[in-house]
Length: 426
Image (cartoon, rainbow, N blue to C red):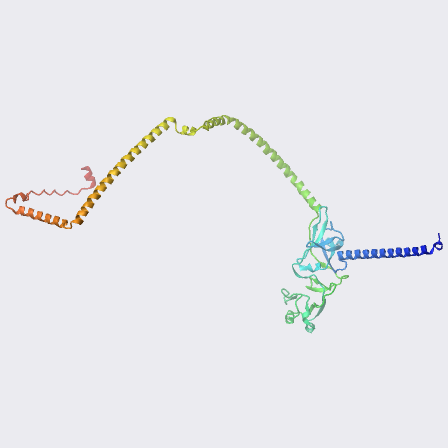
């Protein structure tokens, strides 16, 4: 049916539908383009396509488990990719495999001239290996992003605003042994540089940082040299390589094969020990059978210990027990009687002391009551003494008080001195 055969109302509706479909297709196309652009941008952001990348390289013994595009890690972060893996020339007998990789910003700032190394580590149990770099511990950054310039010392003195300029090399003394000034040192001590014998120096302008690397550290010249990403050689990191898992397994199998003869000899020794143990158990069985009567006697003896006094009757027989009871009974009665008599004696002694105390107390009372009794007694004794002396002088009784003169006993003669031996013989 031709379009001219349609009514004006149908043609109007059809044109409106066509415009709606056109707008829908246009909107869907715009959404598709926007989604694709967002995906590309997100992928580029995730892979670091818009970030600055610093190139590095290292050498390894083998390329086992490594391939181009593998990630490079630093402190557990994925910081770059391996960009090239190739074999060294046949006449290079020092290194075997050349590996080049790049680190994206800002992780290349962790790579310094001291402490930074490239490690080839095991990634899984199937022989996969990975590349890992370590952060620096000292020295200088591997790359710089400032304008480098080599000029004379006299020209450097005339540079405007010297606070923005710094050394880009190491300054040694005249003997070349001690470092006087290090890179990144501000240009302030020109006299020391002249005294060290330098006429030209490498310097860099730290006022403005560039968006790409401008210099790379040169170990040979001990200074930063110009860097061009297309023509300059990347920075070299020494490598620490670990063997692949397959190689470790092969070494382990070799060690096991070497140890198998020792294991077999050990099993033979174990068999000998087991046979000796079997003989020992048979001898122990014979000893156990021989000890059967002793054990039965011991069981019979211990069976008699299940009633009261059994062990005591073994130690003290019945007759000894009776004698001991009789002795203890007599000793008890003796102690009782002694206790009784002692009590009576103590009681009588207490009475005597009470009587003596009464007598002394009566005498004391009499003496205190009659203060002249002592003088009367003294006069009585004096008069009695005078009376006796008078009787001695009376003519009738004088003879009764005469002293009898008797011969004094003769003095015994002195004995001569003798030795103890002669005295014993006598």
